[in-house]
Every structure is written in C-alpha cells, then in structure tokens.
Image 1 (cartoon, rainbow, N blue to C red):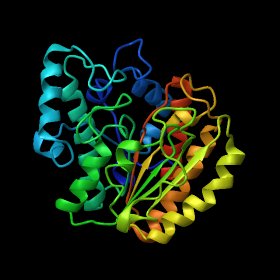
Image 2: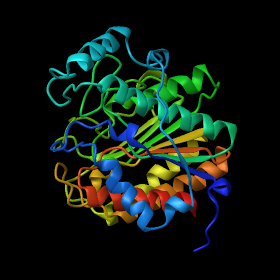
Image 3: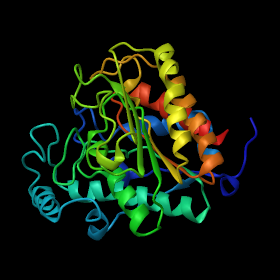
Image 4: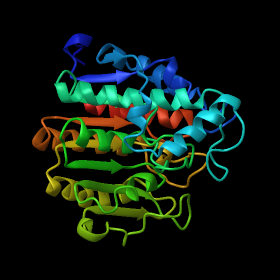
Length: 320
C-alpha cells in the first residue's frame, strides 16, 4: 500500500470528542462510543495516516434555520437545558447539551462542505452524521437536526449549487430528506432500505418517486428482510444509472451500517463490501460529473463491529 502524507490526501476525515457527544447514553443503540469503535479500526488499518484528519466544528443557529423551524429550535434548546422528555413521539430522548451536540454534527458537515467546494478535499467522510429522520419541525429516529437538509438548503443559498444527488444505503428509509424535498426536482434521491412494512419509519415504497414537477426525481428501493450482497448488486445498477442520468453537481452519501448482517435493530444481511462498493462507484460518478465532490456521512449502525468495518471499507474506497 502506498502511503501518502496527510497534506497530500484528497480525502478528509472528521474525528473528535465533540462528535462523540452526539449519543443518547452508554446503553443506547446510538451511544457515544460509536465513533471510537470506528476510529480504532481506522488506526488498525493505517487509514488515519492517509487522510487529512480534521476537528469537528459547531454551526450557528442561523445555519440550523436554513432547514429547521424556529419554534422547533427553541423547543430543543429548552429540553437541552433540562435534559428531560423526548424530542419526538418517543424514539429520540433529550439530554443535557443535545442542542450543542446536534449543532456540532451539522457544523462539521458544513465545514466538510466548505472543504469540498474550495477544492482542498474533494472527498470527505464524517462518521457521526447523516441524521436523515429529522423533519423541519421535529426530531425522529435518533435524529435531532437533519444535517442533510441543512446541507442541501445551504448548497443553494450560499453556494449556488442546485443539482444535488442524495444516495442512502442505511437500512432505514431517509424519510426526513425524502419528504422535505419530495417536490424539488433538483434534489435527486436514491434510497436503498429495508421494506417499510418491516422497519421504521414505515415509508419509502417503490411508488414514492417525488411529487408534482419532481415526479421521477426520486428512487426508492425497498428490500426484503435478509437481503444480502447479491440482492444489493441486483438493484445497484438501477441506482447508479439513476444518479448518473441526473448529472449532479455534488453527491451526498448516507452510508448507514445498520444494513449489515447482524445489526441488533434491523433485518438486512449486506456485508461491509457492499458499502465499499457503493462508495467506490459513487466516487467514480463524482469524478465524472461533480469535479470529484462527494460528502459521505456515517448514518446508522448499531453493531460496533459492523460500523467499524463498513465505514472503513467506505473510507478505503474513497482513498483508492
């Protein structure tokens, strides 16, 4: 393996304690230890020596308001102060400091976006990110702020980039992204996930293709429980052709590792190789259409072994 200095790497990786703060306790599936399980494997493979390791960054409230309702932000701030109750109907508990923890996830993704667009690191990986269930006015599924939604809105308002491809291979349907941009023809969504008849949030069926002028700009690929890599490759060609036909200006990948066999809260059976393959293919499309610009977010994954292996296969593919 050829080793390069961090300064020469086209790939940036964000790591730090501020990202670990986004977790719901040591006994929760989305615990603060997830990033450290990933990092241990990163160092074991020597990938930490091949990437530009960057520190997390906090966003401003105005950044959050690019996507979220002001009333919702005020509610999160109140519950962040007392650490009581839930931020949705019962999946996403508040904890003391949750507002700042969520702001670090969003801010880190925005800093990653700036790196990508100025060309210093066209490929960036943020492991604790990809909170695809949060809506504009509520949390959902362990997701307090929707970093992806903020990214898309700021790509338009701050950078003038319109055509965004969002690819999601998390076991759960990215409902917070899909429904927030369902009628937007310039947000291209391709989402492979466990069939909503068997898994939260119960959405993302094949006939959900966008609405109005955006009809046909969204691709949902529900998979039966226990779908494996053969099933993944059976549908991947359709996903890749869909993204390629859109000729995006930037690609966002949510690489949730809860679609790997053995996850404690899902029923899929992919291997980490599927995640590495998807990342490699999307990097190729980014090179062809987007000046290499791709931002990868870790997403879900509740087996620490699975997420460590899958995310590092993704990181390795980004370095290839």
